[in-house]
Image 1 (tube, rainbow, N blue to C red):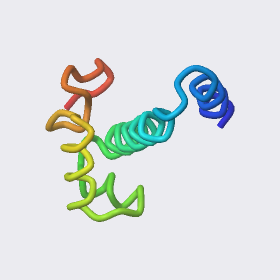
Image 2: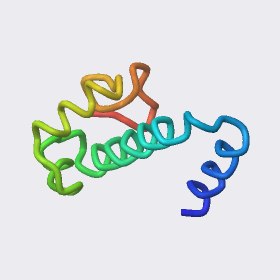
Image 3: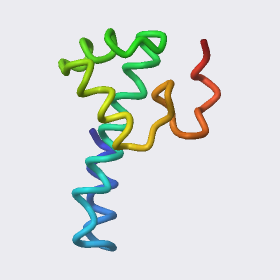
Length: 81
């Protein structure tokens, strides 16, 4: 919560107008990445954890430019299968 608030303050001071899209994308990306890590990469389980449908998580992964495993195009090392 504190980190998100601090980032919002920083962005509002420096880049007004770009704040909503940037923070919303990063928030969704972080939620999906952590749910996928917690579910060992199983999208349906991750979607259930987040309270969204499997089609929604798949669409969000594509929209956010995340790889097939739900990580970034260059997945972080902690994502393993």
